[in-house]
Image 1 (cartoon, helix red, strand yellow):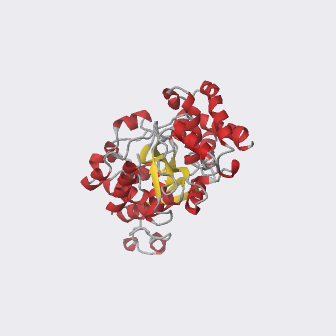
Image 2: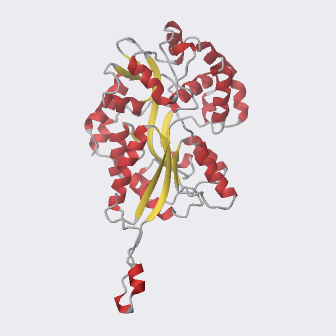
Image 3: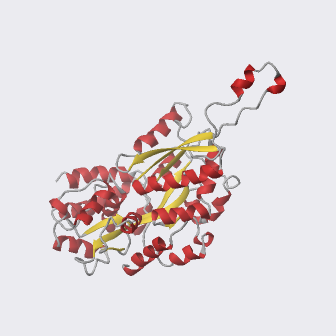
Length: 392
């Protein structure tokens, strides 16, 4: 059930500052006893076992909490399907999961027992190049009609954008009366307020990754954020020089916390006054009282990156019909209301398919971020950051 308070909080902050199954069945069936019966007429049909598929996903605790809610909801309504979630905590790396799917394909071993995979746009595009993802069928996932057509076209119907969020500036409003409105103002604030700004290691969380990418692409044409050609890397030099220069002014004169939560912890403790953070994490922790009430958010112009998180179905999965049924549920208005409530983020389906209450709560709040799609250049970016910035 969508809690109005969460949605109202999203609008207020963003605008003001810029799953056990009900009929699952056991591992044993009646078939065994029936086989021992001397009278065929007394045979009883074995109880049909649900189809179980493996769902691998990564993210912070709020992502796990979301699936811990949605999966039981789905299984209660669909006793013929059981979802086995495999959670990979944020910062431990999703690359091994992708590598497992790739290796299984190359070894002619199906999908490596991975039937559904959640990750960002870079993994959608990498999987497209490597021929890993299933083209999702509209006739079996009816609720695909609820997703924006342009979004699906951009990814060639190879993934489902089931939720969205944005990286913003989170700050202590008692200490920061007027937050930066653009990158130049932000860099100036960092230099004038040494040790009061922090961003996490970009290889361990999307908020730090966004800060680094946004800085690098400040010196490149706008269209470069959608270009995965390695030639773009030649234009990164000014951005890396700036990041290296900023190192002496950030927290600990060059200490970069691990994971998105690492910088949020510094903001909570008062050790820093401003950080880049995911809007959904800030809103959730404010709602739970884990962040000070003085915490506010602002988006710069042009904005930090943001956009959907995707669900992909490996082309070689043998459980696709069961997965399709689950994906259809995830794109329902019922499930999307839980996404909004639990994640404090934007729904993955068009707002016109949501309740009027939710529609009204998002007016003007889902704008301002940019979608970066640089593919495998992201790996080169984080590797060079380690050598050019973190190692200094």
